[in-house]
Amino acid sequence: MTAVDQGEAQTIDLLDCAVHYRRHGAGPTLLYLHGSGGVSAWTPWMGRLAERFDVIVPDHPGFGASDTPAWFDNIHDIAYYYLDFIKALGLTNVHVLGHSLGGWIAAEIAVRNTSALRSLTLMAPAGLRVPGVERVDVFLLAPEDIPREVYYDQSFAAAMLARPKTDEQVDLDLKNSYSFARLAWQPRLYDPHLAKWLHRIDIPTQLLWGDTDRIVPTAHAAEFKRLIPQASVEIFEHCGHVPQVEQPEAFLRAVTTFIERNSA
Image 1 (cartoon, rainbow, N blue to C red):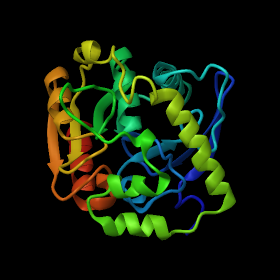
Image 2 (image 1 turned 30 degrees about the vertical axis):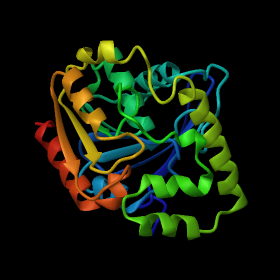
Image 3 (image 1 turned 135 degrees about the vertical axis):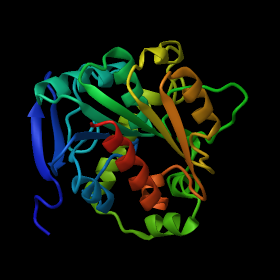
């Protein structure tokens, strides 16, 4: 497999922050915004999407190989950065796919400005607080317990826990955890101002969720749907917080169908 097959690595220096990103494929532009664990490699499902789309996968500021800039304080900073990132790359009609923390960032982007966006896919996004709905507090979990809570199928958790980590990966995990805490520690995994502005999202939006998600329970899907005018919901059975891993075919079908329907 060549370097291009794995996503061509690139860097953009913007607003005193060098952001690392991978890009591969052709077709409608798909910007993927990762969750709190970052994205350490070009994965098979990214490669499948790149067969149909121009897939761009950045490391958020503060995560992975990207810089942690002096202005990095809250989720709003990241949303504004991505609006400038999209402009700096000259992107238009962008289909944004965000997972978990990345879904929250994607929603924050869309309430601010959708002029360069074509569609929005929010996969188990954080960002809202639903009264009466309990969820696992990821900040209080031991590292070895996080995979067990993330996955419905515990074989995925076991495989993750059995995978040896290099010193470099340990350092990246610490960096990602620190940046995640800066964005989502207080208040826990939500923006108290987001709900009142979700009505501003004026592009087609789909919500994807696992039916046994314990990190961001499926009750949040109904709340996002209620607040976003053009939102639809698809729930994956026997699936936790990471549909692209536990239900890859259903995930790819949902994303591909939605983007192609909204690219005409």
